[in-house]
Image 1 (tube, one colour):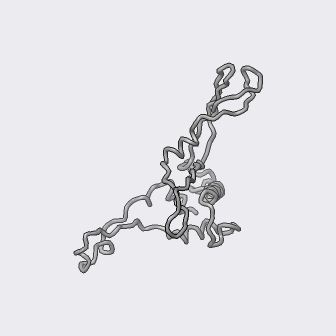
Image 2 (cartoon, helix red, strand yellow):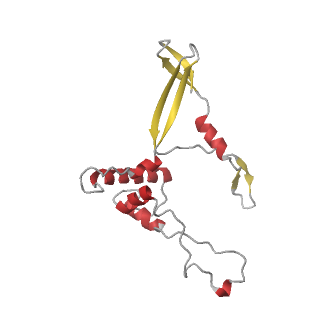
Length: 181
């Protein structure tokens, strides 16, 4: 876990792999026009999943799992490790940022009363953002499999950030009203 934490905080592992004898194309394939991809050296996904899933009932298996749940479990494991293993040996973490801070963000909520027009702001801390993706059928292919329309990312984000009406106890009016968010 220390290497994963260090990698998230330091950025030492987010560089392209250097070109060396291992990445030079074979001269027999030099006539091909398609360049061979050069991948960054890193941790194999199955090894990463095995490390993070160790001791967890769901993630220790090789069955397909929910990505958001896995990511939340990863962040929880990193936080638990960071709080239990100070990085400088002094017992306080050495002033280094917690590795999960890389993923932290705040969403500001704005509630406006439709009766008195009073506004209230609140910022909530998050690590993940669940974005709904609409599934609109487009038809079927020759094999009978359902085809779906492409969905623009902006459409998904607008669904999260759009205006929504909800029941609200307004502190200004002191009444139950409808507020827009």
